[in-house]
Amino acid sequence: MLLSDLDDGNNKVLKEKSNIIKDISYLSKDDAGNIYVINAEYGEINEDNPDIIFLENVKAKISIFNSEDFFIESDFAKYNSKNYNTNFYENTKVEYTEHKINCRYLDLLFNENLALLYEDVVYKNLQTRLLADRLEIDLITKNSKLSMKNNEEKINIFYTK
View 1 (cartoon, rainbow, N blue to C red):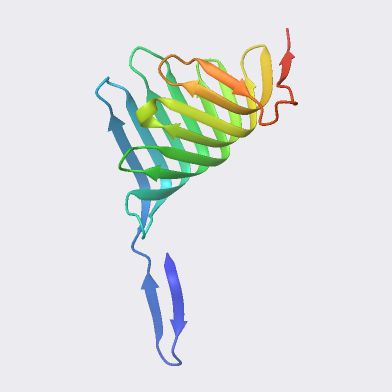
View 2 (view 1 turned 60 degrees about the vertical axis):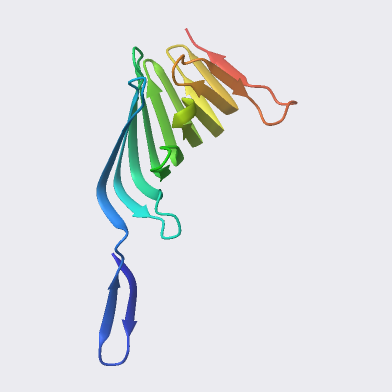
């Protein structure tokens, strides 16, 4: 990938960008045996902070000990290689068991075992569809909390048989 394409009249100088990684994969495991795997088509290391990697075409799998796997997909993510926290954004999708969630943003706080989903949250399971502004999921217990930014607004719930 080219950072710049300079022409001095006679000689063309090409400077290559050296912080791009293709087919990137990270694996993290905590003391409790929980595993976090994140894969991306591309990654770019932040020049100002090498612990931060900007990812493109991202897929993640969270395997919680004695629980169902939790899958995440998004167009982009910002991954912190030091604490494993990840901010997913653009076309973010989450699946675990029969639950499917779409949202604009998802912040995965790995050290807190917490997923924060926000902006245009659409939750679906076998017979229910919920629309909300924010959803917090405890990755260990799978307990969830739905809320709206404005207390005057209500969470929309649709039930089908």
